[in-house]
Image (cartoon, rainbow, N blue to C red; front, side, top):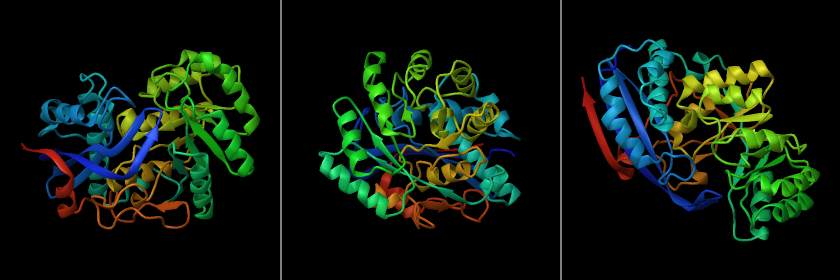
Length: 369
């Protein structure tokens, strides 16, 4: 499949309200959209690394430069027959997983369109419908948090994830568990703690959490393995898993019992599939995470969430939850309470609305062979 054209869009989507995590407070979500063209077909990909390098070493502005100046010139005019071949071509570029991911996702969308199949079927998913959970950021008060959780429970969400950071952790969990004793719940620490906080994590064992997501440093495996030996609650790794090799090593040393797969963080669908296979073979279940992408990135996440080893409701949300306007029309909506359905059309089944996209473009580049 020859790449005849490449279009790169640096976009910024204003959020309805600040999204607060241990990484910081965001009022806008920045990402890079990539469109790959081959003959008369186009594939779209998105990687939302954010506007500031606080979740990972990448940010959207740098991602755009890497995509424009290094990745696009390498791929222009290439005949690429597989995701693995694309990753091999890009292997000389160290790191920059988010930048690579946008191209990898676009290639898979284009590949599925060439086959005239929905992407989830090309990936050998088990069915088009996937479960999602509620992801709740740090709020001003516990009362506000309780009201928000009650709303998600009323909406039928199958689990709740609470963002935590020092000063908003065990007391919050205690209050929420007292109010909601039976909901499936876990916390996401976004790398905010160290092994010096082991005592606090031991106390969390009493609250029947499904997991503790990324409690320690964003690039750590060793300390997570040490912490997992001291607590009963499963650790889920997120930021630490940037490649299939990191997943293999994490499992080998017992650093986690779950892995969150974000296609942007790991470099696209191709490495996401490898990570899922490694975890499946080792008996480690996975789920799909997100980075507040537009519906373009979300539909790729839906396709991945159809895989058999995805055992926990994924971080997939209707775009109206965070944004007044998305880049697609229609926006991403639930197919049923707390569920989403992959679209039946070839590829991810959707592309940006040109007028909506224009509203959010910060910068762009078009490259032809």
